[in-house]
Image 1 (cartoon, rainbow, N blue to C red):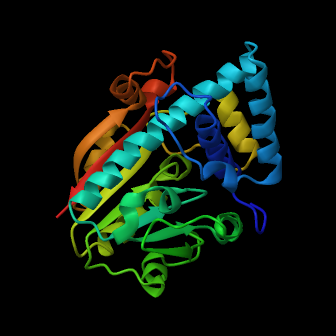
Image 2: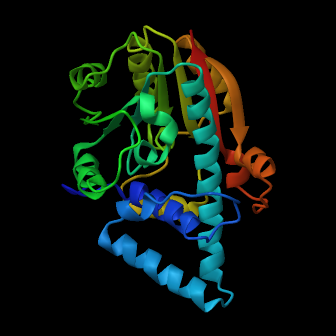
Length: 281
């Protein structure tokens, strides 16, 4: 990761959300106007080229691949939004986004008007994010960028320094991260979350049950961001229970597609990609 630049996977996720917002998506009603604002120049050029192909209206393998990626990202985003908003309705006063990357929720969800949002990520990604989001209108009551190098820094100490209160009801969001962590790193982060949750807490976790196809994993390794974290639903539920969290819902991409009436290809990711919501009272 270069200084002042986001991770490659964070940029790819933002690009897929931008595709969906541009209409290259089968998920009805999906919108994320923040996504294109988060793109570095070379990723913005990819978006522009794709939009130009969309306007020409000719069938294209490239467009179909991009549409599939956008569909999957739109579905993941919507189901996570549902869990976040449910936690807000139940009284959450803080949202902590671990590995926030180029997340746009603090600028997109009007329901966060009463919450303080803490975006936790590597200093390089945070530096870029601050620049790109400077002109966006914030919807959350407050927004703090919490720069954490997970190999060196203490998550709990950094959050408290940023204004986080462990006594307030909190929703924790861990999207697009667990699959890149060792089990030991995942367990250590869960310990930090538990120690930082004296009050009621909801934890939303996006995880994978198996590795991606070899071509995608090869690309991730070229980016020095290989997928190494794989959990089965019973395994991760048991690990969460150790830290006082009880899983309320755990769904796959196939479940999301059925919920939103979208056809997705019947292979790999539809069953391997999952999101769970767990509670700690």
